[in-house]
Length: 314
Ligand SMILES: [Mg+2]
Image (cartoon, rainbow, N blue to C red; front, side, top):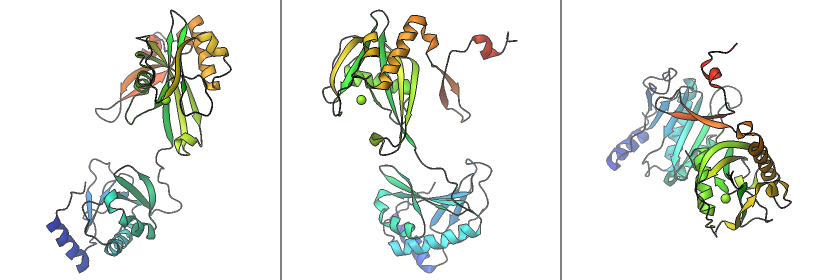
């Protein structure tokens, strides 16, 4: 990745920019197709790009804080021409928030926003033939609720949220944090909103809703987990909830002042309680990912061991 430039280094770079010998061809222009790890660092004067495995060039602006927008734009324009001539597929421009004044200069060359995080925006320019084939950024937010069900009393934990237009019974829950497992979100949100400690058992349902007002117009994925209670004494969070109680499951399944998704989950739980939770549960198993050192969680209906090993199957 691009090293941060020191002030002296920056002055030297700017002198090179003004001297116009800058946008030298990358040393290994066509590299990078063999995979991200051995992608060469392409050098285009002060705009250093890294070639990715899709043939795109990624440029990270560092401490170019003295660079004026006009000089930046001239340099970027020449570099883009160079990359286009080399057949690059796209340019990704990572702009730290303090360099935001350079964004308009890039936009004038055809760059658009791809995504932004708190400290930086990423702009993209498609260079390949035809319409852009670059993937979009995040499409969904993920909300997770915990249906904490006490099998011995047939009671289920329900809340009514504050700041809602109607007071409906629902399961405690909230938005998943980056990198957080679904089950961990459910357990954390239940504890934060109700003070109840619980344990993840399974996934019960997934709702997908597009153009969700609470997701800034993006799509919303709302997942309900079955949790087992580990404590029973409610300590309601007054900022998030109006009410919280242990309600009989059959009462929730037939209640009028609840949401359709909550009713359906309650009916599923009643069915599971009577007929066995293996009829409704999507259980979780962890596997190693193809990306070295990483793991993922797989959720599906219970699979007999004979099918897992594929022995003893006709
Ligand atoms: Mg909530």
